[in-house]
Image (cartoon, rainbow, N blue to C red; front, top):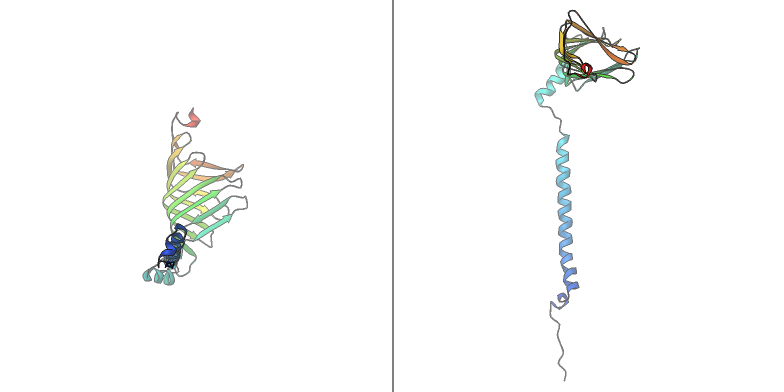
Length: 212
């Protein structure tokens, strides 16, 4: 009588293909759980960035003092020159709200042909009725021609885009170091023209491109 053979409980794992299938049945669900957990963690971290980035004290100041975060201004004069200004914060000088004060100001004066003069200052005062902006405190003026200038104040007529430094200005020019009692920026033939007056001093540097 022929003895029958009984199969082992683990006999169906004896060939490599069966073992591989059994391993996948365990590994794939675990991998899926890991991916889902990662997605939830990422979503939670991204969601935490939606909180308002102000403290209660800062919010009270914004509401009570009428402060505006990241304000900006842009205007174009009849001649085509444009003025853009932006700041970290702005607030009314008094209850009339006719004059706004701003901090950490950056901006640009741009001709109709796209030539730019970059501007920056610690503070600014914008008068709505007169259409004027006064940049104050370490004012910087830079342009593509090679002028790198500093002044204590810079007046901008927002109606005509005229830019004037009413006080001393100093720095470097394409020809060397320059200092003057005042300065004006005007548009001439689509390019910015810087005009210096009131005791102009130029220290000529032959190493500059214009001196070669």
